[in-house]
Length: 345
Image 1 (cartoon, rainbow, N blue to C red):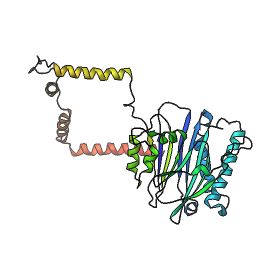
Image 2: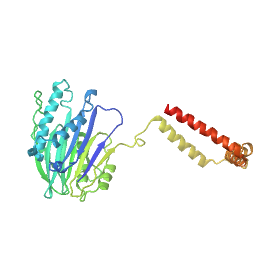
Image 3: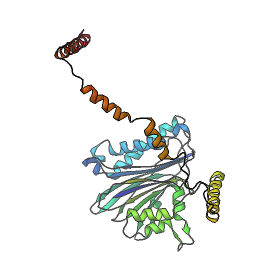
Image 4: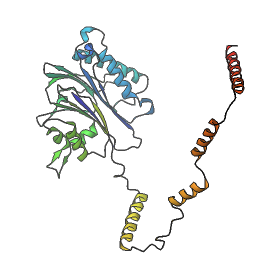
């Protein structure tokens, strides 16, 4: 399998929405039995006290999923069911503590995928306005239609109500998209055979990273922010990638200062091409040129490395008598004993 976390950031300005994705691969033989875990979350109207809600929720889901109460629960569907029950309790405690600002603003999807006999078993739990799709043979399948979405009960809180399970096959593309990204991907392009971005991705016969990035580069949604988690199902284990896509600031920068700079350069360049005046100082040496200053420096200031080298040579030429050498050795020995005594006592 290969996973792509596509994060679309329409603006660098501070927004009141948080989007993120989380991917957890099994780390041992026990965790491999219940497979990989993929999470996508979105939180609108964010307050400072719940700015880390998605991160905390993802960590809690991961720990409760991979650490069930008993070995009997080391089955994907049972492990996810137990994890969602604990997650409901976790969110219930947050709500009872007085923090209910996330109610109605939280969208979160939990997906587990396990390879089994050439196929892939998936289990899915979801709340909010996320979209889960499967692209197969140029068709777009909405697998979340089996989910029975119920109203959120305030107390006791029950956010994740149902789990849907199913099978996927080789070369399927599984997508989890936030609401804005799904709407943008579903919009058809009138000047391009009336195909949407989802249709173009579904038309990829053999999925490759370069083909995906080429489609996104041509049809980049610049007006929205959100997440698209794309999972390409294959027996080949490839490293996942997290790609953050932002609009080019140069292409979208139309300030008055930039316009003036651009037009002034063009006007001056065209004026120089039309009117080429002779240079009155042609042949006269430039008083601020590099060559003149190099000559002045060489004549005025000698090379310090050459001077130092001659001094070393002159010092080596000095002759020292044997008695003087003995006195110097005694002085150094006395200094060494004084230093040694200082550190000992």
